[in-house]
Length: 225
Length: 256
Image (cartoon, rainbow over all chains, first blue to last red; front, side):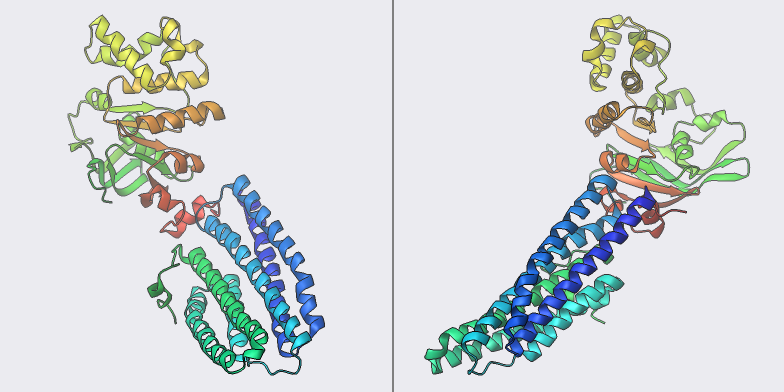
């Protein structure tokens, strides 16, 4: 019984990492396609999403199977519940990467001559958060997970700054409104990805500490190390 | 542990049980509140059954066995000279792993305890028998054949009969030692339902190897290992977030 569940859990851990890697790659390509106005790369992100969706469904079914067949408790139960939720969050990051790629595609096709805002600082931060949330999962590192939670505020701040800047631009150059709205959406999608990375980090903390810290900002700052 | 509105019915303080030189239960401190279901879990030889049996002094039957420290039921010290063991066992009902009805009629099985304790009135006995069988959810199945020999009942029915027999003397605490391990899943489920029904009316202390059963039926769980009480807490907490590494290793099957 114990041996069986160990084997199943090892498989789950590998599977969630595969989903994580694919989603990280998808986000990387989406961001790059935006920066380099690379239509082909943007399309790759869009075309790759069904595979991420398929992996998500498969992993969820595996989790449900283990719950039904092995009735795990304690740390095993928390791990499986966390993986179920993280799986969901990752799939959502995949969707948001597709959204960014769609915006990138538009901007590459119709606004090739127009300059873009510099999202590089925000994309670097968001990718780092996603990476850290997955590293925290792999290494069962709750201190790193707490750090991810704290970073969310920084990205929220960046999104607010873009909102104000883009609002100003729209007033100054109303003819470019479509282009600017697409750029505003990119900032918004990146901010959502940071939220998902934060959710993943919160689930990692639950898995390790058995403590649900969602909706409690004060807990973020504990162990920020 | 503190349970508002619940008094501690069974209280062990530095309580030990020895078989010869072997300390099978080692200086256990535990307070078991009234009206709740407490499960004792742990690997074979951890002292859980020994602890359970200490409550009605069944270990007295083993010549090399002796106890140390204090064990009190409702304030009464159990390991003291001159304690009336018959009166103690009126207060402590016990259900064993294998159903063990007396080779007598169904009626006489249930009436046995009350008769020993002086109930002679025929209609009073009949009332007690009906009430006990009702509480054990067996009445409807046997009411037309109370004179039949109890050995003719199925295993699951026999176990419920033993439960009815235990509660017929209105004990303060019910001890159950693996009460469903010899039963099929359907009869097991009936016993588990009964534990839920009897909760509140009785304080129940149950030893079980089936961890999922402990999780399902109990309010509190005590984990014993090698004679020590490792952890005692709310069942919902023990099975989601145990405080001790040893508890976690045991309930997740990582032991040994």
